Amino acid sequence: MQIRLLIQIIILIALLFLPRWAEGETPDRDGLHRDTWYFLGYQWVTIGLLYAAPEGVSGWTNEQKEGYRTSIWWDNVTHPQIDSDDFYINYVLHPYWGAAYYVRAQERGYSRRQSFWYSVLLSSTYEFGAEALFEEPSIQDIIATPVFGSVLGNYFMKVRGNIRDREVRLGYRKTSDKWLWVITDPLGSLNQRVDDWLGLEGRLQIRPYSVVMRHGTGTPTGPFHCFDDRVYGIEFKLEW
Image 1: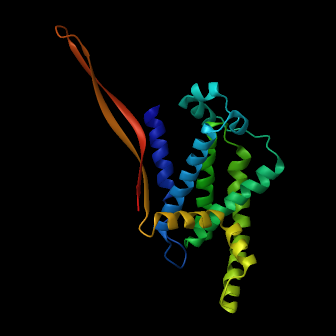
Image 2: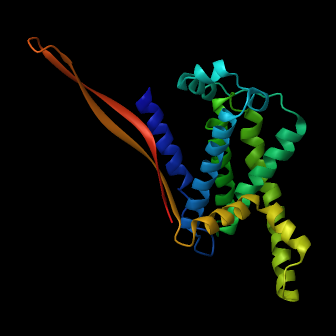
Image 3: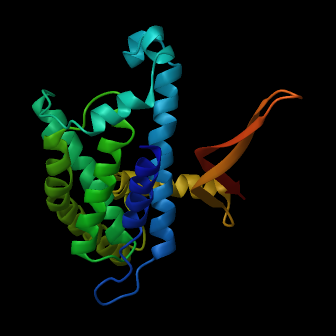
C-alpha cells in the first residue's frame, strides 16, 4: 500500500509539471514550477497552523490529533462525497481560487487550455492532499473550482490587460488598479513577496525520498536475522 501511494504521489507531481509549451510563445516553466511549490507549501503551512491551533479554531480535538493515522487520510481520499457547504463557499470562493491558479499559469505564458489543466491539477492536489486530512474530497469542488475558475480567470486576464494599457497610457499605475492587480492574482502577489524575501537567488526544492534502514535480531549464541525497513519522506531544501 505504501509503495502504491508513493507512486501515485510521484505521478501527481509529474503531472503538475507536464505542460511545457504555450501557443505562440515560450512559457516560463521554471517560474510556474516555483509557483507550484509555493502553493503546496502554503497549504502545508496552513495545516501546521491549524494543528497547533486550539480546538475552537481548528475543530480538531487533542484526542483526534494524537490518534490521527495516515489510514484516515487514505479512507477520505478513496471516498469523495457531495459536500453540504454553503453556496458561496462552493460556487464563489472555490471558483475564485481556481481563477487564481488559472491566472498564474497564464501570466507565466501558458495557453488557455494548459492553464485550465493547471487549475484542475492544483485544485485536485488540494482536495486530495491537505483538505483530505480532515474530510472527504468534495465532488462539487473538484468540478466547480477549475471549470468556473477558468471562466472567471479569463475575465481576470482581460481586467489585467486593461490595467497594463492604462499604465502605458498614464505612465503610472493608479491605486485602484494596484488593488485590482492583487485581487486578480492573489497568489502571484504573495509569491512575489516570498521571492523578495528569499532574494533574487532564492530557490526552493521539495522532493520525495526513500531510505532503507537495516535492523537485526538475535542473540550472541543464536541465529541472527537481518531485515530492512524502507522509510518514505519529503525533503525540503531552501537556498537564498
